[in-house]
Amino acid sequence: MRHPAEKLMMMEFLSLLIAFIFGLFAIFFKQILFLLFGGYFLCFSLFCDGLLLSQRRDPQSAGKQWLRAGVLFFLITLFLFL
Image 1 (cartoon, one colour):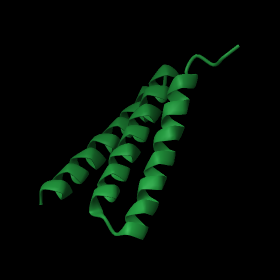
Image 2 (spheres, helix red, strand yellow):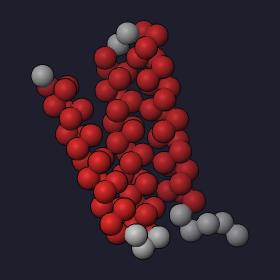
Image 3 (cartoon, one colour):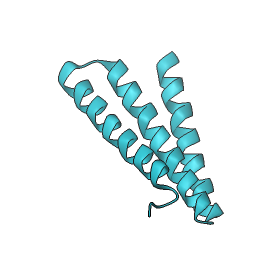
Image 4 (cartoon, helix red, strand yellow):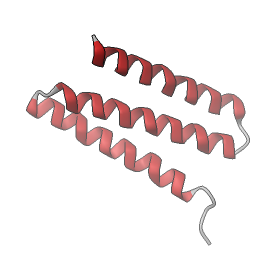
């Protein structure tokens, strides 16, 4: 029997893995675009973690993760336009 939130857990893990890969590309190829994409995938991972926490009936921790994801998304977008 599968866990009800298995898809969310897999999305969180895959987005962390993709963020790590984009981070490595940013280091080796010295491209800022890879760094920005890695940050957005990290933001998506935090959002998925918040969804998992909300399904586990922990709204305070879920809200913190969503706030962290929102602040990170705002800062990455601000960095993109400055």
